[in-house]
Image (cartoon, rainbow, N blue to C red; front, side):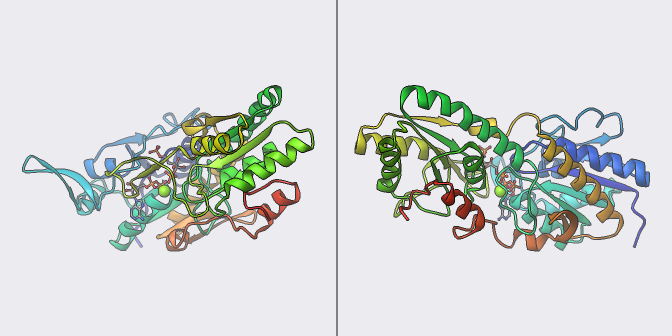
Length: 365
Ligand SMILES: Nc1ncnc2c1ncn2[C@@H]1O[C@H](COP(=O)(O)OP(=O)(O)O)[C@@H](O)[C@H]1O
Ligand SMILES: O=P(O)(O)OC[C@H]1O[C@](O)(COP(=O)(O)O)[C@@H](O)[C@@H]1O
Ligand SMILES: [Mg+2]
């Protein structure tokens, strides 16, 4: 194997707290431990195609470990294998992956660290199949990647959502209202479940357990009869009513997964008010749960992932992703991580814990 002298790094997909801590850890470990050079591609895979990059050094990553966002920029639509290009004055999708590989070659980049979620890792795997030395780091607030116990960013999102529930509690109680908090989570309800347990929600609604309106109302009424004249519902944006469909806010056809969710909280509020006259208010947490400073857990896991990714590069473990398994950081094939989305097990211990605490999943068990 050729000696590794220079590596590239990029952040892909929706941003999340901890990206900068990973970039910092990658850069520091690469320089301090192996004397490598590090280039950061800008705006996710777009920078790889357009050859837009910056040099990363100890100075440029100094003081960013606790900051939100990504100093490199990110994109949740740019895919070199299906890249929006101008052909004869018309915008069309073309495969620009060879151009990206040529850029890597011209820059003498020996390995590429891709920090991303399932979408970015699909792309990373395709580059690996074409001979690029790729190592991946699992990112997303949704926590829905396989082959790792946790993705960085998730726990900060849970912290934000949990604080929101705490705040909603006091005003819900004052006004004897139902408060609905809509959180992110397209196909997996991890944020809703964890924040719901942490914040003491009364009803937790997740995509994995379709809810029934009458069961949600039943729970609210039971509480009312117990003299608890308010209720808190936390609902994932991808939650569905039994027999119903996900509520789509808009379509982004430039993205591989074009649906953008949002609105299920408002639908539920309207349905509750129509069916029961219980006064209901909705808060959509939105991108607040993706922004801001990572909590210490995410700063630490991001640092561990970043350092481990550099070690994986130096050990020639290409086509792999760093993963938290138990209490250890190991490497697993990227293919394992993207095989299927990691969803909440409706029969699992976490759901069981919530049920034991008296929380309803809107399914009238
Ligand atoms: N299954 C897939 N196969 C290939 N590319 C995908 C797939 N899903 C998403 N992508 C592309 O990957 C990029 C990032 O995906 P996205 O879901 O936005 O972020 P993340 O990397 O966090 O999952 C987008 O450019 C998207 O077009
Ligand atoms: O920023 P956008 O385009 O509104 O996307 C929102 C989506 O991105 C996420 O925040 C994160 O998803 P990814 O990690 O796959 O990028 C989802 O929870 C949410 O559905
Ligand atoms: Mg994704």
